[in-house]
Length: 309
Ligand code: HSE
Image (cartoon, rainbow, N blue to C red):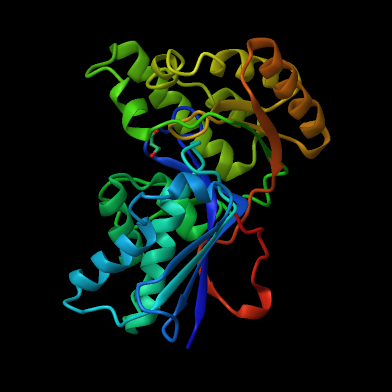
């Protein structure tokens, strides 16, 4: 009866696709549901477990909301969360938790909802469809309001690119990064982003690195968020100078993401770390594959192993 759901990290926006573009990354959170375990028990293990202490558990919240939406009550169960995705760094940890919770509740209640229904519920809860789309479907996705479902741009692993991510030690808050945005933007900036977001989407669809690079330029949120994250512009510049195809703020930050060919990844990673030292931001650069798999119920035999803590 015990089962595990896993969901990947994701990077939202990719520069110009604010609240619209998402990309799944090879870093996973697991939610194990044990109906025979101590009812109500929640154990959080793995990366940043201490940061989640005392916070509302988003997977459990998603489970409760889905059950209520379907007029059902959840049976008793114990939850174990094994996390690899850094918390509050712009890498979609809350989207992974939400999506995993929705799939867990779907399985527990035997609802057998279609992915589109899970996606709609996740979008409603998160408020935008970028991270949750990537977490649920994998690959690179586009969340278009009223499209009736996710738009899958690429499975990710066919792009010939990896993600080099600089993850600062310091956390960020999505609400603060959204509060930093102006109520209105100049029309030329909006027009610029229409072109770059469309170009980036086509670049991801056609695996055109030059178009992806030209498209990963933003004027709607990064210039404003750079005031919160002074490391953003120097690190993006350093990554591009080191040969990255493109670079951007990952989600609402503070992580910085570069897309690079595997041959360039080590140079981009070294450039991130050198520039971070120069500007005085503590953190680490990691290189992650772009994954075609999204969240799923998995069998115990292929479960991930992450450290406790
Ligand atoms: N698109 C969102 C933002 C992602 O940039 O605020 C974080 O939830």
